[in-house]
Length: 164
Image 1 (cartoon, rainbow, N blue to C red):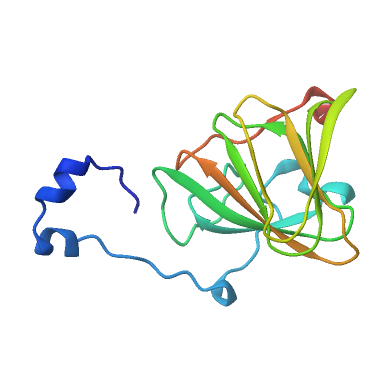
Image 2: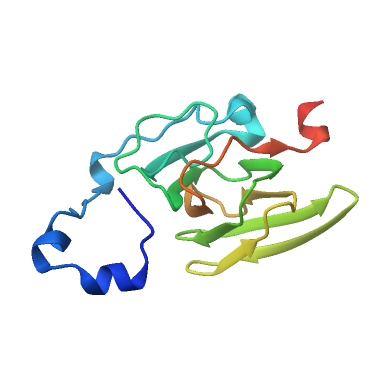
């Protein structure tokens, strides 16, 4: 469990008090991707899996995360070529880090979008109210890390064109 604490409180803790907070190890090969984490994930262009590491990751249909998160939510998306997430926003900022392949991240309104291609280990942060989406721009399955502020963010807010 992650807890935000005051710096003075941490300084005042004894080693025994600190020992009461256990770290958690998360092994990728012990995780199963959630292919139904988001309602539009059944559409061919949005088909993707979500490995939930910490917190539910703003999923509409979360599986149990390995670790709970109170200050952030973290997961990894896996998607085939041309697949990804449609335009959506969150109540917190979101960070994407390309772990493999090439990913196009797009944001703004459909008629006025900016597009950026992320190569492995490139990252982008997008503020809370901005509509954003992403797609695998490579030729094979690829992995994208997604980090959201807030441990229990609500499900995505989809752009009206997605809901139509």
